[in-house]
Image (cartoon, rainbow, N blue to C red; front, side, top):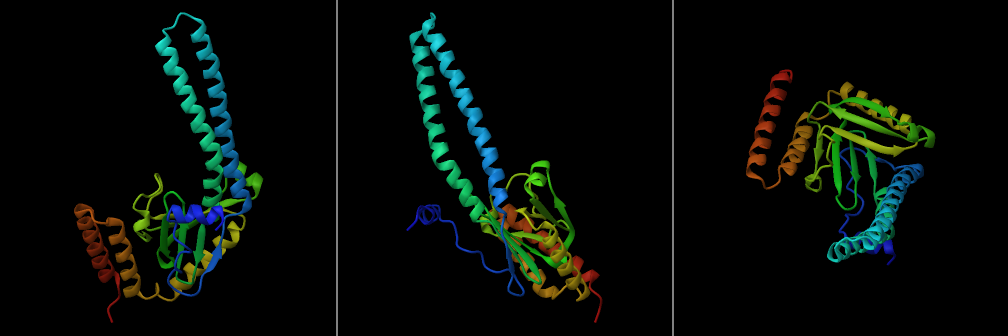
Length: 252
């Protein structure tokens, strides 16, 4: 077994995610330049850490030559040694985790939903029903523009995005109703396919309402987990959404 397989097995990273509801999905992956961008940020962080450790080395040497207490100097030297050890470990394993994070990104699009999985140390998986999508945008920063990549941002009406139990430790700063195709080099193609899928779902009457409600309910309860308060709140949210759907649904 390769080092990649051993690491994924050790970290219990799940295999390819299950297909989203609907037709066999198209699978998109992050572009190679996305990996280069991540490595650039990681490399700059390592250089800054190295500069800091070198400065600390000379400062400790200055303290040792002065009249500073020997016990204080020894403590500082021990801290310096630990910091160097941590930096070496980070250099050895950091690039490996970034590589695996890049390789284990899955962006799936069917005729009814999208499913996005990302992460290695913490696996996050999100399913969004196309009928619930409210806005699709392409985001591109200066470095992304230089590398020819972009992020496709998908927003729902505050509740169409679902997370599985793997997403209980959700990425900080990313709401449940927002999903991203990160670091892709065909952002416009993905955006157009999403818009067409949303249009077809709406022209068809938002798909099968009962089936969509069942999928959303399962996602809400999965996020609630075993926490009684969150579970109760999730049930109230589900009932409110079902009541709203019943009121808005035309009779007959």
